Length: 489
Ligand SMILES: Cc1cc2nc3c(=O)[nH]c(=O)nc-3n(C[C@H](O)[C@H](O)[C@H](O)COP(=O)(O)O)c2cc1C
Ligand code: SF4
Image (cartoon, rainbow, N blue to C red; front, side):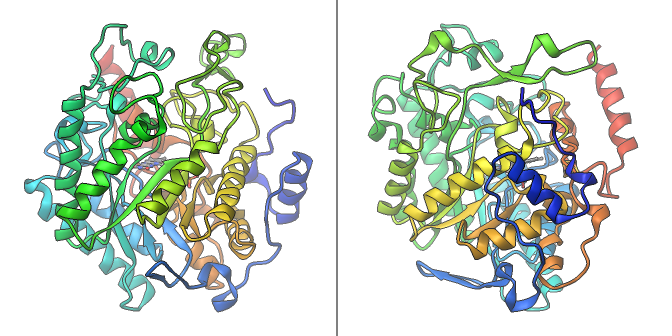
């Protein structure tokens, strides 16, 4: 555990205090003392690159709500979330949320699916977002809107919240045990992979026909696309060499280019990873989660089950293959890249730094600010090496009231092209718009990283900002958790 006490950012009123704290942790955090408004704000700088034109540097990250209808159509909750995405004023809407390319590839029975019976519903989501964007910004320049296409692979739960139906590419010495998989549980065959590739092609064509500007071929967070990249131990066409581990991407892209010409392709990538974490039994007690520690891995060196991981010291990142992957994206003429890290399932402190852990997590093993800067630094490095890409950065929500100060400085200093809002967009979609228009920040809406939006779906409930979004109520969550628990016992 970090020996440095964690500063609760929610209690910090002064930006200098944040800067001092970052310095005390040895972090290089870009952070402006004052917010600028209008064209002076780097958040409002236009961007023109690779044939794309954007009016500002605000992006909305894909944020799923576990609230689609059982048949994969949006519900009224889904619709409301997409309307709120539009209220961000962002010029880039990255995917809206993960949309399964098939029923069997859903991460939960309430994930959106793209199929003929959901086309109208998905088109309605896009239309609702565009309308609220127009109403919010007062202009008719639409944001670039993509759809995030996914197959959940190891984390498929298509039929019941409490029944995992993993579709895996290789046996993972730590994650298999967490999912109760035995050594002889089956792997996806090359033939089954070919069917999934075709599902992506069909889904992409449908997305284009529904008016989406791009599709994201999701390669992050432990889902199938990401698992391909770490399939070192798989034999055959999709394992071992870098070329084989990226074959899925190349096949998906090739098919989309022929079946849906004109549609832009994007990739969200976990740029680095680390070994799975668990609560330390030595610091756990009844009702109290332990501090996160890595699962034992000494017997697994060289570590061959990660992407962007140093095989000899797997708790450290290694960006060599990440660079190779970005070079491949350039070769494939993919310009839109969204960088994230790790997985919410096995190392949430890497993926979404939070003060309060989700129910299936652990107490933070480091000051969450370290996690924010880890992602920011990786993005800075990669952006400097791939200046032709348009790169969205992730994991800023932990910065809370100071997110705009850091975003403004990071953009001005060229660390990143877009500031992607994840959790913050659930509680306060207009934060960066308010900040860059000189309006007062509404502190009561600022995400405090309570993690309820992650905990709720872990319990089979719709996600949402229960503590701060008046549409959901904490009491609702408490009630729902109680009855979910009663149902299970
Ligand atoms: C409730 C919830 C749903 C999410 N859904 C998705 C998703 O559908 N696709 C995806 O790539 N990431 C998803 N993420 C991850 C976010 O896009 C983002 O990477 C993460 O929250 C860190 O950014 P932040 O600090 O701004 O929250 C989700 C995160 C949360 C909390
Ligand atoms: S529930 Fe709300 S405050 Fe908590 S992490 Fe999610 S968005 Fe932030």
